[in-house]
Length: 97
Image 1: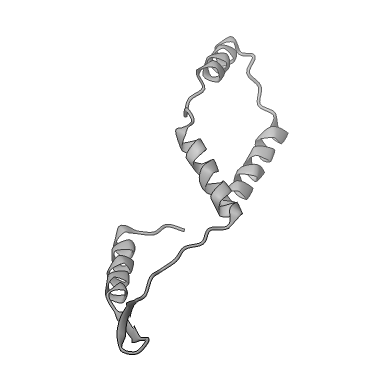
Image 2 (image 1 turned 30 degrees about the vertical axis):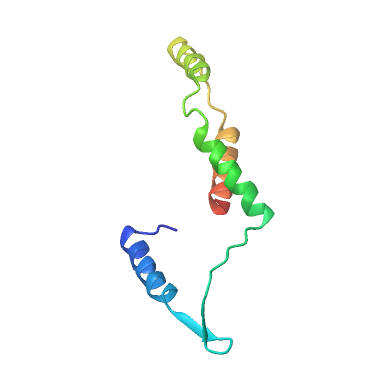
């Protein structure tokens, strides 16, 4: 799902309007409503995983060098089954992330 900047700004405007309301209860005393957030263990794990991925190096020089050598020497081969497997893996990961 893609959330645009405009959509985000609209949500923030709505939230600002709602958070300024005060609930008058408890014998006439004004009590402000507070929002709470509770994350599951799975969400916390996913958050740590995403942070680790963002901090990892994007380019693995050793792999790139080895592939360049194979391509230039003409020994690089592509296995159709491996390509199909990676495509399926990527589709599954994209569905969960």
